Image (cartoon, rainbow, N blue to C red; front, side, top):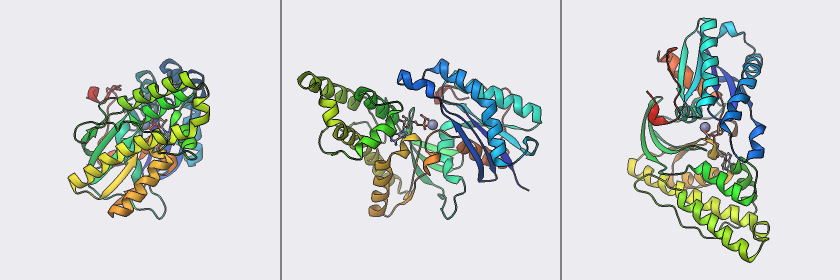
Length: 339
Ligand code: KG4
Ligand code: ZN
């Protein structure tokens, strides 16, 4: 028998709804929120209001694109954390009401596990990772290294001790006057820049942990001092600045990934999260993988930044393992608040 799961993702500023039939994605609708652009970052109050406006049309669009009726759904999976509480509450409340109305189970999904599990969405001609594998999850809010032992059994061996990699891309972009979200803008400028033009201190942290706050500060100081001497410094060096800072971030990530691969002996290496959309990071992993005989897993671009297909696939594996949720479940802003 086939299983249809509807996934809902509202943890930050994307309202996304997807439908999977077993591990096959039938639809994945994402409504971004332009409203934050003028503020150069996500405004939580505006995000929850936009989710409220978007959620019903996005659910309808996802069902329509999937070509199924809501009565065919076997369960409703939704992200219940970590994320912005006001944003999560819109998805959680909708999921609960929808599941109750349809008389189907609810499934709670952790946003970071969902990012990792995007690798199990069926893709024609592509392999899925075997367990255990190492996954580097790099997003706007998180930078984490996990040994993934099974769908829901993760050993987190590394974490950022301050800023996330995506947050660093976004801050660098803001300093340079590039639009939000900064990652794609920095990536684009970096493509025609010289990555060795500027040197930044390599961020240091214990073990497999990472740190980016020092890099952010040294970048800020470099720009501040250079602008005092030359007011056109950013314009004339934009591409080189982007390429150099991007290389420093990627060097730091790859250093820990290589260390974790040799420390654990695991040669199956995956990337996930919004920053895994970065073209230089993707290329670097491919190069290192070839050199080190790793089997590498890089998500399709549509599954890198926030999307509900990853929530739906996580929901599918939970459904198969009878890991169903309850209407009492509460969303959590941080991983440490997860019950
Ligand atoms: O996974 P995601 O959509 O949201 C969170 O869970 O945080 O990640 C968003 C982050 C943002 O910081 C954005 O700037 C970054 O991913 N990002 C990129 C690229 N595309 C998105 N960073 C670097 N290069 C990119 N091409
Ligand atoms: Zn995310």
